[in-house]
Length: 69
Image (cartoon, rainbow, N blue to C red; front, side, top):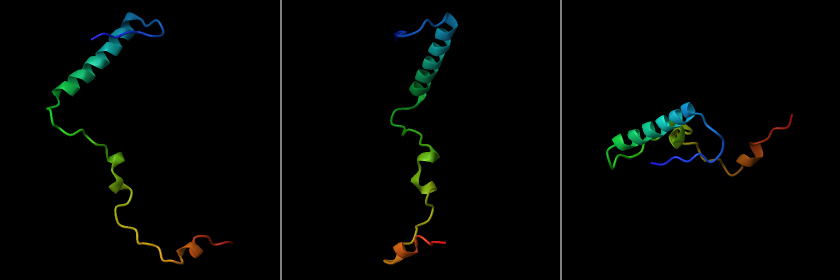
């Protein structure tokens, strides 16, 4: 694996930290058995937004959407 610094002048400590993160991520991906579906976040679940069906509005529902004061 080759890492190339495109901009800046990182210190050896900064390079070592970046390389440790890249290696840890690669090791974590290698430890997952093939064919395992990726973990999904609950934030991307559409069921958390609408947990029950919303009733369909009636044909005249648009007239009740705004009540002037």
